[in-house]
Length: 226
Image (cartoon, rainbow, N blue to C red; front, side, top):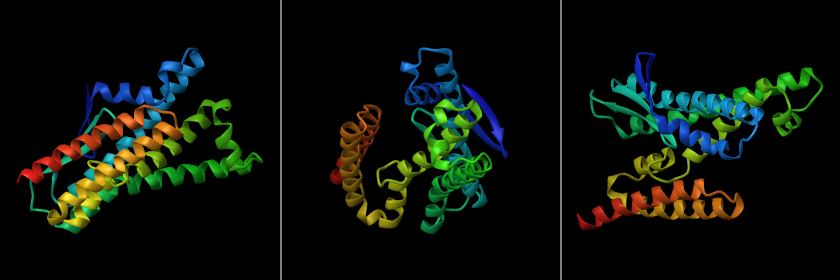
């Protein structure tokens, strides 16, 4: 486990963070030194992007007087906060939205940077993105950072608990509509899992969504018993 502090916020990086990120990056099929080096760049880009995402949550919560901690674990991470005065629903909404928002800003900023670089070399941004795997390691890193940032932010905004989109939906719906919130979470998770399996031919996304659908189902059972 790696531990450090950033902006006076404790950060812990668990081993499963690196393992799952490497699997997403395609480490199983990496059979050359060049492929392994690209996996390393993918890990660095993913670490930076996801850490910035969690910093968005943590810094906003810290601004509202909370004690915060960031943990990077399997399939992402979370920013835990405690203490201070109880949060209103608007403040809770802002804390949740800050993560994907800053990650989208990062992705767009990187794309703008790549666009300027491409224009100076007489190329288009679309061309640079398309051939990034065949270009220099630096270009591959920046393209990967942009893609991870935008994809991770969009994925986190789908209305599935405990993703940010699910938390935002939970905040908007309120505690009186928790059953409906959980049912929507289950339905959306199943749909996205099936789409990932049929369109992307990937098992990671269906497993990821299946775990979340199951957790929402267990929570729905507990609410029904109460």
